[in-house]
Image (cartoon, rainbow, N blue to C red; front, side, top):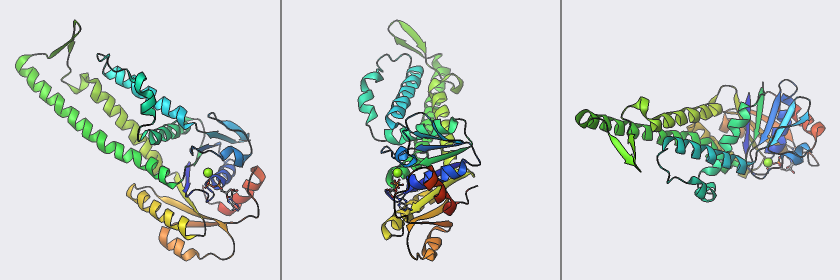
Length: 300
Ligand SMILES: Nc1ncnc2c1ncn2[C@@H]1O[C@H](COP(=O)(O)OP(=O)(O)O)[C@@H](O)[C@H]1O
Ligand SMILES: [Mg+2]
């Protein structure tokens, strides 16, 4: 089971996701991962966390994913596959560009996806993700879909190139390419072409990530407060989720004091709604968080 807790900054994502993780850890071996570059999961769980899973209580582990680390990991893997594909291009000295690449658009989204992938690969049965505020989270969730659009185009284009090449080959025989005294045969078939293999491999990886978000056992849970701003932001988030075929399985209205009209929320989001009462002090530590889970419940 995978749980993604989303919502506006300050509504209580870290608090609610911690409570959910503690609750789930009574039934499953659970890990909670903070994906928010401004981590405060350790503060809420009252233990120091880092980039490796750390045991918090019995069946519960926690990690604050180091996005810089995953960015470098992502870029290193990119470099490796580029070198593998373009062996003959010694000009590709990506090392030199790492500093710039690290801060190029889109890298943060891919780095977070890399972190999600790595966490999901670890040996747990329940995964809870405490996400960054809505804007970045939506971009992260959208990234696989947009990436697949251009990957499919690139694969199409590469197939066209291979077709042209094999037409040329039929007329003039094998196509050779000379670099520094070495003659390299240019591939004309898909089965010999490292580029298309790499593109297809990458496409499969991205589809696998996309599946994580749309799986039946994935719970995307929106947290909001009884105020207009967090409600409106969640409404916009829901529109994006709808387009991505990601189901919003639950809304938690957190920090509730007094009466809240649930009908508007229920009507708008057409999903389960839970109320969590406003406490008179900050909620930190296992005991206090566990108590909050009783108000959330319903995640199986
Ligand atoms: N139900 C609640 N009652 C009282 N304080 C709360 C409640 N939920 C969260 N808080 C407090 O609100 C602040 C923001 O919560 P946090 O979980 O860090 O939000 P987010 O992760 O969405 O930014 C924290 O100080 C937290 O203790
Ligand atoms: Mg937080």
